[in-house]
Length: 90
Image 1 (cartoon, rainbow, N blue to C red):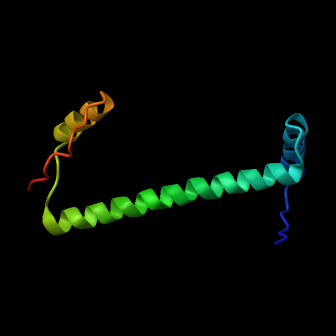
Image 2: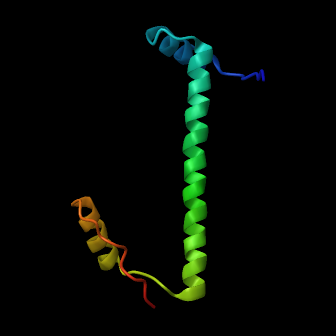
């Protein structure tokens, strides 16, 4: 699908310069920039939705871990231990 973008002269020059030094077309640079932006924003939105769901679950059940409990568990994982998630409590 063809799409038109209106870029100011400065941005157009920057894209062209980057394309030249990367030995790519300006079209490729713009397509990659849009692809990377969309992927990043999709991940951000997924993270936001997960956080909202976790908040709703907490409000409904009251189940949680303290910050210290979570830090201890994460430190074990970081150290390579096969640590199970501690049980949540109210």
